[in-house]
Amino acid sequence: MPLLEVEDLRVSFPTPDGVVHAVRGVGFVLDRGRTLGVVGESGSGKSVATQTIVGLTQGARVSGHARFEGVDLLTMTPEQLRAIRGVKIGMVFQDPLSSLHPYYRVGWQIVEMLRAHTDMKKDAAHRRAVELLGMVGIPQPKRRAEEYPHQFSGGMRQRVMIAMALALNPALLIADEPTTALDVTVQAQIIELMKKVQAEFGTAIIMITHDLGVIADMADDVMIMYAGRVMEQVDRRNAYYRPHHPYTVGLLESLPEASREDERLLSIPGQPPSLIDPPSGCAFHPRCRFVMPRCRVDEPPLQRVGGDSVHHSACWLPGDLLGVSAETDADRARAALEAGGGTPESAEMSRPAEPTGTVRTGQTLDMGAAEEDNP
Ligand code: SF4
Image 1 (cartoon, rainbow, N blue to C red):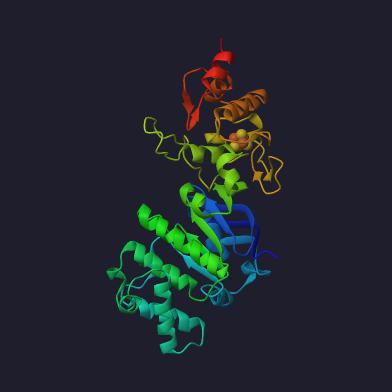
Image 2: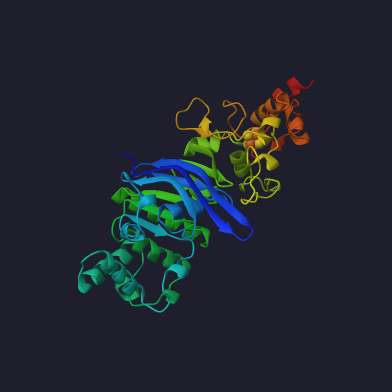
């Protein structure tokens, strides 16, 4: 039995402007000891989906299933969920200052959390709090336990949050942009810490981020979200080397690479859509350079691609068009043109490549081959 099995999760919020359809049929499976990376732009529904699972989206209309150890979290009462949060499911959020109370000492806050969920005596809870602070790499933990949150740096505060989230050895840790506000050195330390904890306790992790670099460091599987839907589900290696969905390809192309000093960063044109009135058909179609007539009408289901049982993509392009090379993009463009679609940019791609050296992000033409093709 998987640790967490989410099926057809739908979340919407009534607002004065209309109903916001924040999550529209999300499903995934997470096993013990595995890390699922959830990636997407702001407003893609990645945080709302996970917060709903643990009952933190009050006022939302929710349907679907989220079975944790076989029991549906979405049917639990607030009291039942409170008993699970912090005990079996730990959470770490982007801004630790908003989760730590500024008025109370850090050690006291951990002690209170331990005592709220266990029958630990005060002295034992204090010893455990100091032990936890030491475990997450806070120097002189006994002394630091007596200090207030404002006396900690951003990275140290995030370590405190991880210590609190892991205090009761949860089976699942939900980390929502835990490293976004930190500099890259501290970011690397926090990721190493989470990996260490996972190896030690077999914790499953859902890592929510817009940073594909973080995913490369720690995820086993990746779920790409856009406009409240899953666009692609894939293992980490294939996410980087054999993506299928044009949105995933666009995200990869927008990654800065140190070796491309002379090139401008690429971005996905356009804006994420309104979730009050999402686009018809494929939600990504207004921004997709391979858009075909069918994409504007029919919503593509999440289906197997690349002959791989774990690789799924919600896109009407042929399932064997995988990768981030100029050649694959040209094949995608040809497929789009044959189906009566494509854009001027994609039409350009479908022509044989010109021997002009570097043509696309991270892709360098094989000059010899290009010259043979274009005598
Ligand atoms: Fe969506 Fe069509 Fe583009 Fe695929 S090709 S991402 S279905 S618009």
